[in-house]
Structures are given as C-alpha cells and as structure tokens.
Image (cartoon, rainbow, N blue to C red):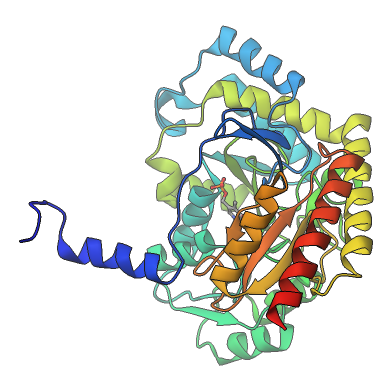
Length: 398
Ligand SMILES: *Cc1c(COP(=O)(O)O)cnc(C)c1O
C-alpha cells in the first residue's frame, strides 16, 4: 500500500526523474565564510566554484562598512524605495555607481534576477519582442516570459544570426546579451551588437554580472571594452553578488529610462529596498574596486588565469575561449562530470559540477572559477589535481 502522504504523485515523479538522470540538485552548507579555504561537513577544501572573484565577500573593509552603516541606518529598508525605503546609503551608492560608469542614473534592485525581470518586463510586451543570445542567463529569459513578449534566441555570440532575427521582426524591440557569459566565460561581441541594435532601431541591454569589478581599467567591466559607453550601451545591468562580494544589483541608464522604470518595473516598485547596511558595504566594495588594491587584485586574478590555462593546455581536455575568471572544463555526460567532481573532492578541491538545464544537454561541466583570494599554491594544487583526475579518467575511458 502507498504510504500516507500529502505530496502529489507528480511532484514525486518529477523528483524521481531528476534522480534517474543524475540531475538532482542539493544544497550544501559551508561552516565557514565564503573564502577559497572553506569548511564543509567539518572537512577543509580549497573551493573553485564561487563567484567571489576578487575575494571581497569576507573582506574586513566591507565587514566594517556594513556594521558602521548598520549602526547609523539600521539593517532593514522597511519598505519599497518609492514608499519610504530609500535611505541615504542607497542614494550614495546609486550616485557613486553612476559616476563610476558614466551614466545619468542608477537604480538599485534587490537581486540581479529581479533587475532583469524588472527591466525586461517593463520594456518589452506583446508588440515589442525580445531577441537574445542562446546562452543568456535564466533571469533574462524569464524577464521576457514575464513581459509576455515574443522571445527569439540567436546562436551564441553570432551577430549574423541576431541580424536575421531583427530583420524578420515586424516591430522593433529589445536586444539583450550577457556581457561575460556565466557558464562559458567568453565575452559577447558588444560593439557589433550595439551597432546592429542601432541600425534596426532596437533597444540594447547588457547584463554584465561577471565582468563588473573584474575586467578593464578601474574594473568597469564590459564598458572598458573598445568603443563602449553609456550611449552605445544604454541599459547596463550589474550585480553585487559576484565580484562586489555583497548582494543586490543595479541598472545604469539614462534619466528617461530610469524615470520610466520607476513607474513600470514591477519588480522594482513592489519589493522592499535592499538592506541599507548592504548598500553601505557595497559602496565600500566599489571604493575598493576603484582603488590600487582593486587593481592589484585584478592583476593577481589575471596571473591565475594565465597560469591555469597554460597548465590545462597540456591535459586531454578542451579549454573554452575564455580570458575571464570563469574557466569551464566541459565533460559532457552529467554522471561523468559528477564523478570527476567527487574525485577532486577526495583531493581536497571543491568544484560543484554544473549540469543541465543550467547548461545545454550533453555539456555538463566543471565550472572552475578563479579568485584573487586564491594563492599561487592553491592554483598549483588545482592544476596538479586536475592532471591526476583527468588523465586517469581519460585512460579509463579508452
Ligand atoms: C548571477 C547572475 C544573475 C543573477 O544575479 P543575482 O544577484 O544573483 O540574482 C543575473 N545575470 C547573470 C548573467 C548572472 O550570472
């Protein structure tokens, strides 16, 4: 007889199906802060899968700024920005970001997911379609769904494929791309996409969650690439949960777009503002990113990336065309990717395997991420371990 349960059969069936296909997701608990040297289940690991690219999530300057801000402004926003939840630390952060990036206005959002839902659902609708890269982040896809807008996706970073979709469309809409692709680490052809949007009279939006703080002069991310500025890239989303080491997100844009989003971006209007203490910590993070210390961290990260690529080049796996902190090794099969992740764990390396539907079917991978908080010894350990694990695994396969 079936055990008494209130859980509908279809829920149990969906779980069983995920389990069968080695796609079950699970939360693991860290008993330590977010640093490369983590403690999980009372064991020490060197972690290579966090997005804390500059090692700021546990930085003393940010911790101090957070507690200093909290002691003056408290911890809770108390309401949405438009009711009475927009405090001085929020305003100061918005102005500092606008100044840094060269935009008229910046608006804060609680998370990057919400920023993308908010911007896309306000700007697109049944008559204004969304065209985006096939590998764009899930939140950009979901924004188009929330907008109930026609959604078309072009081949990854393929400008000709994007052009076909724009040319076919009966009305102009919104062209959207990741700046740095989150699961591959490569950078979108922004100058060409911007020009394409311009040529067809489309709006152009970039989500630079993984570039900001890490790339370019003063860490301005994709904006530091050739020819990019507020005019060519009129709607820029950035997040604080990655290189900034805190939480939340923003959109940098023109005065007119900001006024419009303030009226019509429902995930901005109907949600509580981020904690003012987080805004204070994020401002400290921005100052650090702009400083000589930030520059040193970016240079250290670049050295790690170069070392990693040079070492993995000689292994029987393919590197992706990435010069960023995201250095995936595609394994293919989900079960094999999990087995390699487990082998690495036995050697003291923590790198969670990324499986479909986060990445396309057949492209399960180790999404290795490097951080300025890693030491040279950490990188040596990673590469030595990969050498052991990948060489053994490929021998077994042949
Ligand atoms: C992580 C990420 C987001 C979501 O940001 P959160 O602040 O974590 O919600 C959005 N876009 C991209 C490209 C991301 O990688």
